[in-house]
Length: 258
Image (cartoon, rainbow, N blue to C red; front, top):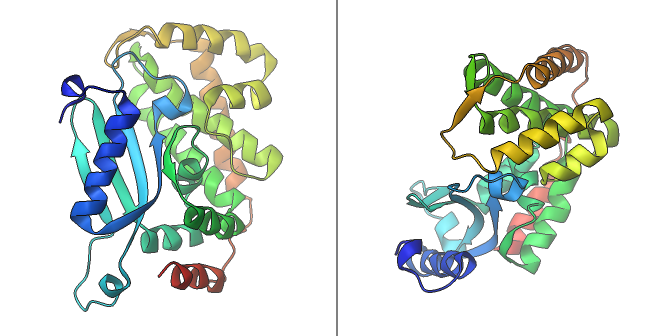
C-alpha cells in the first residue's frame, strides 16, 4: 500500500509494515527508527522515509545448517525505504564499532522499541570506538565532497552529507562518545561561531529545495569542509586503535535473547 492510498499518518503506515514483516518473516522487531535526513532534521519537501529496524529470529532458525539472510529489504518506493538487520549481524557490527548502529540507537524518531533492545544497546555502548567512528565520518565527508561538491553547481543537500559527518567527528574528538543524530544539536555544540550564520542560511535554503535541485557552489562552506577533511585524515593516521576486543558480553546478550 502506498502512503497516498493510506488513511492515516506515516507512523501508522510504518507500523503496519513492521507488523507485516513480523508475520511473514517469523521475526520479532526489537527496534525500528527513522534514519537519514528526516532523523537528522533537514529533510527536503520530497524526502522519503528511511525506516531501519533490528530483528531477532526464532532460536531454531539460528541452528539451521543452511545460511539464512541477515538483512531484510522490505520496501522501496517513492515514499518508503524499509530495511533491517538481524540481531546477530548487529552484534557482530557492534564489535567493530559500526557508527551506523549508534545512529539507529539514538535516532530521535522511534517507531517502536523493546526492553530487549535496551539491554542489547547497554552492551553495545561498551564497544564504541572513537577512532573507528571518526574514521567512518571522515570517510563519508571525504567521499561526498569529492563526488558531489567540486562542481560549479551542486545539490545543496549534499553539503549536509559532508557537514554532518565533519561535525560528528568533532563531537567524538571533543566528547569521546556517540554524537547526537540531530544536525542542529551538533551545530549548537561543536560548530565554530564564524560558521553558524553560513550554515543557518544553507539550512533555510535547503529545506525549500527539492532533492534534485542545484545551485551555485558555496565557497566558504566548501573551504571549511576541505580544511576539516585534511585535518581528520592527518589526525586519524596518528590515532591508536581503541576498539574493545572481548566477544563475551555480546555472546551473552545474544544467548539471552534466544
